[in-house]
Image (cartoon, rainbow, N blue to C red; front, top):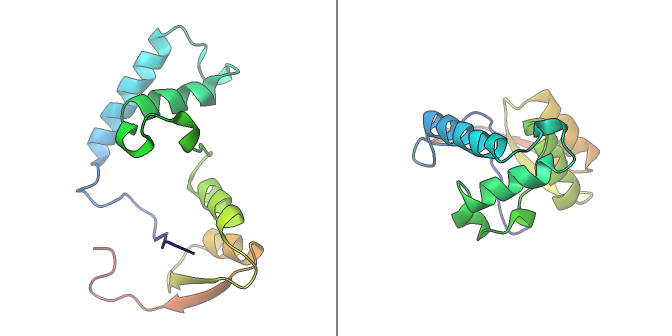
Length: 126
């Protein structure tokens, strides 16, 4: 495994993107999408169009404007399940904070990972 994923939940640190900035950008993207004549979430190309809008705007620097680099899920638990199923192998070790969501633990166990709880310190969450 080449990276570490911190699945503590909550909003990312304020330096990455503020909640208000995210909401504003999301609303602007939704308005652009709606005015483009799309039928919205019920339409057949809805997910593809959302990925295109995000990869051309808010996430252009992260995706180099390639929408296929984005994966959409129906929430954080679904995102974690997708990540675990594609990244973890039987016997991999996942370090979790002592207070970890039950759903996250179930997802890691289902993927065959060994879960090791660790104590946080004054730097945790910083």
